[in-house]
Image (cartoon, rainbow over all chains, first blue to last red; front, side, top):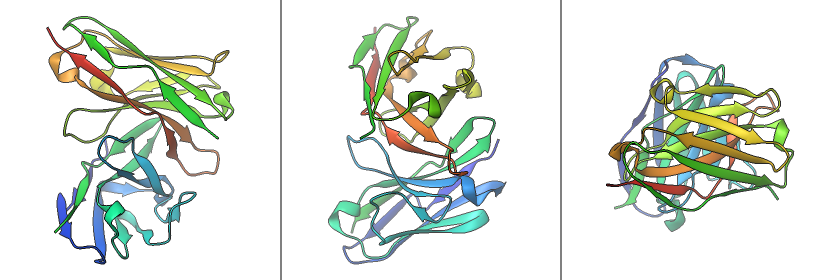
Length: 109
Length: 121
C-alpha cells in the first residue's frame, strides 16, 4: 500500500505570502492519479488539482500543482484570508483503491 | 448542477449498525464511482471504500473489509454505506464523494455535505 506523507504538518504564514506544500509517496505513482483538496472547518473537501497539475473547474490560478514520481507540490502564490485551511493530497492506487495524505494546515501567522 | 445530498446525523450504541444514504442529482449516476470517506474529530480523511455503479463492483479498504457494505439503487440514484459492529472510535463525519475517471485522470469531483455518526452508550 502506498503511503502519502505531507509536510509540513502546519504552515504559519501571512496573507500575501507564498505557500509551498509537499506530498511525498512511498513509491512512484502516476501523476495522472495525484489530486489535491482544500478543506475548511465544517465543510466537505473541495477538489483543487487533479492529475498533479490541472486546476479543477473554478479554481483560481493562484493554486498550482507540480511534481512527478514520488514528490509532488501544491503552491499557493499569494495567500488570501480564504486560503487558510487544511490541504490534502490523494492518490489512486488502481483497482478502486485510494489513499489520502494526513493533511497540511495553513494557518495565519 | 451535480449535488450529493446525504442523510442526517445519527447516534448509535456500540455494537449496532448505521446506514447512511447519499442521493445524487444533476449527473448520470451510473457513469461514475461513489466513494465513502470518513473523518474522525480533528483528524484527516480516510477512504473507506468505493463502488463502480455501472458494473456493481465494490472495493473496501482493508481496515473496514469486514464491517462495511456499499450499495446503490440506480432507480433513485442513491448510494448507501452501512457500517456494522460500531465502536466508539467510529464516531466521525462520513462523506460520500463522486469519483470521476472518464478523462483518464482519477479524482473526487463532488462531495456530499457529510453525515455525523456518533457512537455513544
